[in-house]
Length: 128
Length: 376
Image (cartoon, rainbow over all chains, first blue to last red; front, side, top):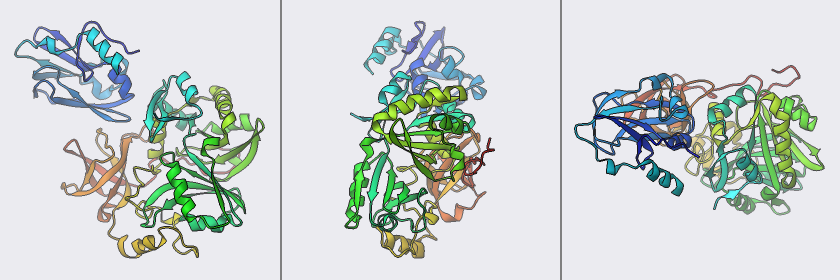
């Protein structure tokens, strides 16, 4: 059974997002990393890239496949987790912590109704 | 519903992740993950369920002659107890499947084929089978397990009493295990030394558990199709549906030595392959190994270009190479770019990634083919 953090929001594409004032931190869920298997490389987004909700921001390479990561909220990429360049496996071992991927600075408050609550995400996984 | 192999329940118990592979419910990996399974095979040992593969038994007044008639290799001088890699080719010379032939005696042989279309392969071969021959599809009745890795010989000897290192590479013996007939071949699909076991379906589960148990202290772990794929890619071995298909022929894929255009017998595709060899091969795309300089991974279907960006081919398999490091690929490319060391590029998500044509295999184990007792 995949771990679902109760402290973050989710997308149906298996990203998680947490908010601190107008900064959103984004990663992929425990379910996503399990599905991907051993992650070999995270192709991080470019700094200052401006993104809309649902834009493909970067790519995770696992042994078996390349998988896109989408922006859960709109804004500007202001930070990427460069630790992942040497330790892509952190996405496997600690998806909600050291495995975070990028931070988005938002101009406006995100519409949190568009995101999934932990319970909703749990339901989504149960239906897979 | 995908078909289940004889060992399906064992995989569930071991916590395998199951995927649909060509209509078969197969473990892609166990709890350990693909990288750990890959490394186990290169450094210690791994066990694979390959029960999904097909086995046809041929009874014939002259097996070698019959094999020469239905397959593209020349089996005339292949001794009893020896195996040979070969192709089932269609009239147009393209590949219906790749296969391994086992010569059991002058009148008996086994043909091992891929899982993807066992029934199709069987029907195809029956069409060309000369009168007085019997080809029996024994796939459902036959279990298959591969044990691969530098410690495989210790484990196999513990279970069967046979030190396979005394056998030449690509040969086999017919023996007995728990009262059932066991074909033990020194072969595999990983580039590491090991064996393939063919055994009665009734006892394959018992053989699986016995091997797991005997192998535990020697670092043996169960390995899924994910590791099987990274291992065979490093070893430069083709996979049907990727490097081989009804769109390519064995000559393009670099298997000239397994295609006999000189033998007396006619076989499906002989005329087309002869024509290709004489008139088209110089211009045709060829299968090459590519080593990628960057960290992004090429995948099947990605375009190969010249350094200037002109399309020159396509990737058939790609992935990380856990043992040799970096990313590698197999690709069909235009012959003028197919020289070892040539610089090319792979279009990965609309950005070029530089690559170099590399001699196959990417990974070479010195002990793979060696005979003797003193192998590491």
